Amino acid sequence: MSLDQYRKIAEPGEIRAIERLAYRLKGRSFIHVNATSVGGGVAELLHRMLPLIRESGIDIQWKVMKGSKPFFDMTKNLHNSLQGKGKTITKKMWELYEETNSRNAKRLNLEGDCVFIHDPQPAGLIESKKGGVWIWRCHIDISTPDLVPWYFLKSYIERYNASVFSVSTFAQSIPIHQFMVPPSIDPLSEKNIDLDDEYVNGVLEKLSIPRDKPILLQVSRFDPWKDQVGVIEAYRMVKKYRDCRLILAGGTAADDPEGKVVLEEVREAAGDDPDIHILLLPPSSDREINALQRAADIVIQKSIREGFGLVVAEALWKGKPVIGSAVGGIPLQIVDGINGFLVHSIEGTAYRIRQLLHNPTLGWVMGGVGREHIRKNFLITRHIRDYLAMWIAMENSRQKVIYI
Image (cartoon, rainbow, N blue to C red; front, side, top):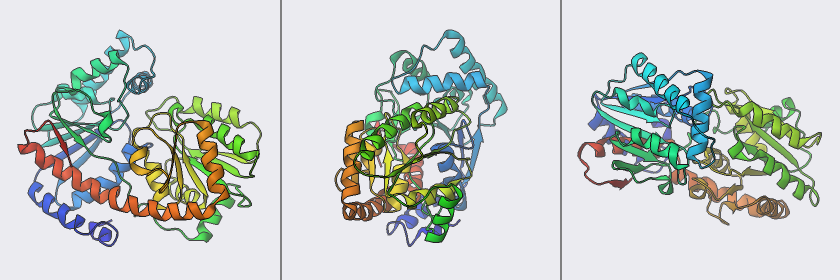
């Protein structure tokens, strides 16, 4: 994939801006570190973004930390605690966190001009900093964290040179630079490229999903914060008045031990309803997800908490009306009543589903507006431009908060 292929899609001048910024950074070395190479939005973003940055003449590497199952159990609990709903984290768990980060610091070569550490799992790697600029990238909603875990993590974060949040409301009171950079989608990836009807119908046939009635879809990891059970409840409210199908498609991530438990809860909630299709998809299912989103009449993202929710941008890019919870980064993507609806409850979700099923023309208009909104604001080219500008700004900025 080449940056030239985005010239006809991205905003005018965006590729030129990337080229000018990259020219100033040629010869520099950058390292990204996260907790998993597959599953979840972070790994997906890095898979697509890093080759395009490397094409611009910048030495950029991606490294993945290793950890035991107890470590990932602990960091999942930490993740939940930072989102305001975790369990007690014991002293022994914190010791495991420190030991795991220490082992990874010895295993990974983290000497670079700029080191990008993604999310809480590898945040403790800051202990190994020897030079360069270190940036902590937070992809989750930490606007109302449980205080004890946050203060422990904060003791690491304060030692970074800067932090990056997806939404301004996630930012915390920390004495380092804070950048606000929303995530993005790649319009040329397998998950977002155009597909013909024959391919879409073939995927539905393969998955045993008839197209005889309107399709509601939620694509998300099987995670308690995604509230698939709440989506089932909303579907059942709608089903009393309008026949439809519900697809709940997703997978699990290597650093998420809760996935299997949540999947079983969702299956139990679905019962034996033949119009509810629960799909556990492998990480290589990007084209299948693309087809499902194109087949759907309405896409739902009923998260309880959400870091950003790129599946919203993916669905809007495909011209679909989206009903999403008014949490995290979803309100940045959905302009309520314009390209979709923001909701606050199961009942509200059901109401908006019925409204769109009753008026498909409204959904068609919303989908067209939504695609343009994503093109202007949430494509990978804008994301790359923001990151390059941030790296340059770090060299000479004296402000505490910079919006780019």
